[in-house]
Length: 246
Ligand SMILES: NC(=O)c1ccc[n+]([C@@H]2O[C@H](COP(=O)([O-])OP(=O)(O)OC[C@H]3O[C@@H](n4cnc5c(N)ncnc54)[C@H](O)[C@@H]3O)[C@@H](O)[C@H]2O)c1
Image (cartoon, rainbow, N blue to C red; front, side, top):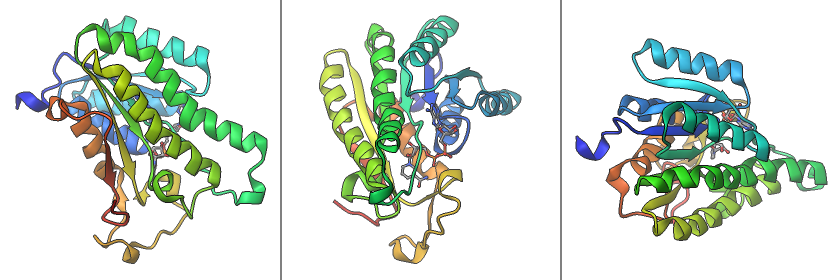
């Protein structure tokens, strides 16, 4: 279907070695995109890219710490050099910290904001000229339920960073519109991934009566990465089983 055909497109997905990033990268690759599996854990990223290639998908691994400007610059330049273009950026890399308010030191605050918020800015800023060049581009950010109503399982610094992502998305959407680069956000709820494995979330509190999966979130990322969403920008899709309704 032409609205979901990503043949000839190149996607950069951060934090793609596992979880939501991995499933997003897989859906993009299955639609025909060449996908850069970018992660701070290069070994895991290489395993993921290798798995995809064995399935006949086009994928390659790149190291990045999204919190570090120089690292992001190198990663985007490498991705562009390798493929000659970048069409889609998924700002998925993130960390979680359940620290309670008195435990959130300056150091914890700074690291959280650096990875979960500043990283999305660095990646978007560096990828933007490539996305704009072809007159069609997609940036997808990942916020969280915690950024929408204040998480009770995540620290205040996590909620603050993810709330920042909601605003960053709108600001970049305004910036990108003149170049037909759309910028949208996915806000997952209680998703079962390695990040949340030890949290023991209770599915009975969720209207759809199950925890989300990485694939559930990835499907929304996919929608926002394809021509299906070309007239949508600055929006956030909630993927939370109905737990938080706006
Ligand atoms: N799992 C959930 O319930 C949930 C809910 C809401 C939002 N989210 C968000 O979704 C995104 C993905 O979460 P997940 O559950 O798949 O987590 P995950 O921990 O399974 O995967 C995160 C990936 O990001 C990578 N990463 C971490 N720090 C990085 C850095 N500085 N630079 C580059 N890569 C880095 C990790 O190595 C890992 O591969 C995160 O932004 C997270 O905050 C998750």
